[in-house]
Length: 217
Image (cartoon, rainbow, N blue to C red; front, side, top):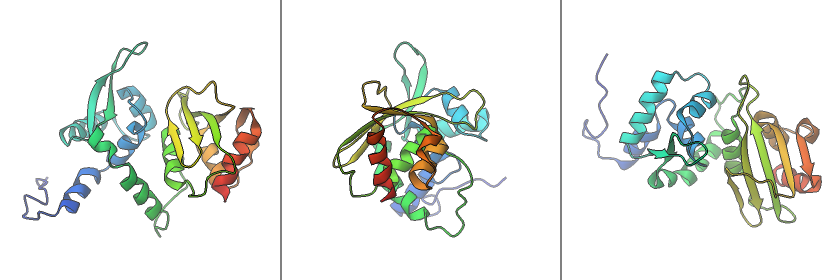
C-alpha cells in the first residue's frame, strides 16, 4: 500500500488544502457531527455511526486527537467514564460545516434515501434553519432516538428560537412542549411534509406547529 503523504509534504503550502485533509477522510465529519453538541462515550459513537467498525472508529478518533479536533474528557456522574468531545478549535468549524451542508443540498449525486441520527437531525436543523424566525419565540424539548438501531438510546435536546435558532443537548423537561420520536421521522416532519402526528407531542402543540411552520416557510 502506498504511503499517504500530505499536501505539505508534496510541496503544497495551501491552508485550504490542509483543511480538506483534516476533515475530508471517511468518518471524520460524522464523528464531529455526533460530538458537536456535547461529549459522548465510545459505545455511544459506535451505536450512532452505522457501518463503522470499532477498529476504524478507534483509529479515526486517534487521528482526530492528533489533529487537535477531538479530545478525551472525563464525564461527570452518574456516567463517570471517559468520553470524547470536540475541542474549542474544532468548534470553530460549525459555520463552515453548516455552509458545506447547504452547498451539498444541490449536489447532482446526493442520495437522501438513508436516515439521520438524533444529533444528525439536530445539526441539519441548525444548518437549514431559515433566516426568518417563527411568528413568536419557541421553546421545545426534543427526545429523539434512531429507529434504525435495535434498542436505540434516546437523546434529549433543548431548542429555543427567538431571533436565532439554538439547540443544546440537555434535558428540557420544563419546556412548554416536547417532541418524542424517531429522528429521521422528525426530519421528515420538518422538511418533507410528514404529518406531525407521526411523532408524539406533549404540552403546547401550537409551540411545535410554529416551529414546523418556520421550517416549511
